[in-house]
Image 1 (cartoon, rainbow, N blue to C red):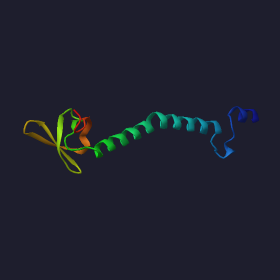
Image 2 (spheres, rainbow, N blue to C red; image 1 turned 90 degrees about the vertical axis):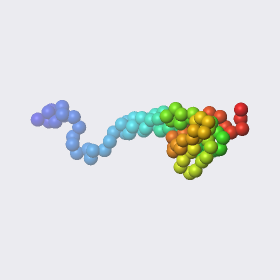
Image 3 (cartoon, one colour; image 1 turned 180 degrees about the vertical axis):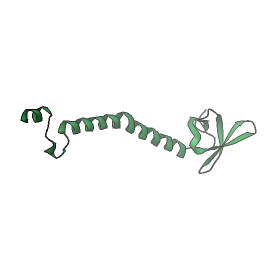
Image 4 (cartoon, helix red, strand yellow; image 1 turned 180 degrees about the horizontal axis):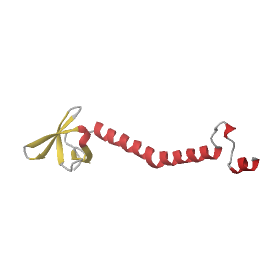
Length: 106
């Protein structure tokens, strides 16, 4: 009968403490995810926020939908773009994808 108990593995009275090597593997996996996924995404979000905060009148921008235009007016949440002569549209500031040319630089 004792031989059967040894064949079944560890006794259930170990308290259920996790194996130390398992914890090391989990820490390594977290570090890999942090440096490959989480940290670059945070850096990209920070750069995007800085770009949106530095928008200025006269900048040429592109929206996330692919519309190119010149900034003619700014508020906290809305950017007015001139996409053709006397054609202006209002776009949420969050949908500005990038600045193609800063004002004054030709």
